[in-house]
Image (cartoon, rainbow, N blue to C red; front, side):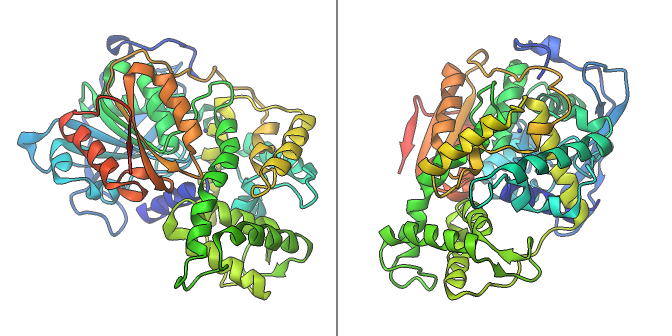
Length: 496
């Protein structure tokens, strides 16, 4: 797969939208993998990349419990430090997802980093295990099951989850049948161990990291398993680390995330002079949205070229969830609301190639289902969905519903890693107060778990991905200063 498809996979995972037999942190000496041959760097495939970016492949064990067994490839990229005399080490750009790639990030968001940070570090990207051009995995799902609307477990308009449970069984069966051995060895802890193999291949004693969204959980797990291999760690837009729930908690967090962020959208969507204005008062936007969704539940509008071929209530709700990720996306939701009010539809949105969707979906499914066991009881989901629909009508019960993990055929190979405060105090969390995908409530749980290891910067801002994206100038300065100099705020701070 070329770099363009890899970037498409990363974009899809960011839009959509996760352990080891050892439960205590490994010391640096215990964690060190065997010596690895020097990497063979060459030009990266694909177009639109910084000409300085290089790519290589690192081989890692398929099963880290069997280090001499079969091996798989991890694709790695880098742009070297721009000032070798100031070089401190390697900054790993840990992608979100699961299912996201940072292989193109040294050329992309890495170039937004301040000059002193680009001088201090080699910028390192990678495609996590299972994601092309690393050794790839595929569930062979039916094309209809690749739609984002199908992957999010939106209940039927009447609240029934029978269809979701049928989807879960069909999709889990396909992954078990077609995913091979690799689908069984996708987990956050496996990714953390892969990162340490890449660290060793680079010849680095310690690494710094900038993890975003799901990448914050990967970064936290890496810091738990290899605490003394970490230098300066930034965790941006943070996941709830609850070891009993993991991705179930992330899905459930959308209830709170939507409630936190929708008022910001409503104020924008009612602002005078906004060409995409949908109401005269902010207070009118929420009831308007709920009325439109209910009407589309009853009377969908045909939408040729889109999946599922119509604009229904759940399509509108899913668009809302995606659009609240960043204020720049608000027009997408507003325009769909205006079209629905007029009984029309906009042009059908483009989707990545099927091969990309198959690959990204398999990586996401394998990771979230292998990290932690999901309940198998339909009654548990039915109860949760019914309660959620009443308390959080904007999300209509989806965050407590059954994903395909409810029918996953095998239990996790090891318990999820419990994040603790053991290890060096070298972590900076940055978080927006209003984040639909990783709400502040979950971020505070990660902050609590890390204890003295971490300091947290909370931005009075809206959007997913804070640093150099949707945060504040104050928050960006704090993160940049930490990466460049190691100086952190003395205590948790709020940036307005």
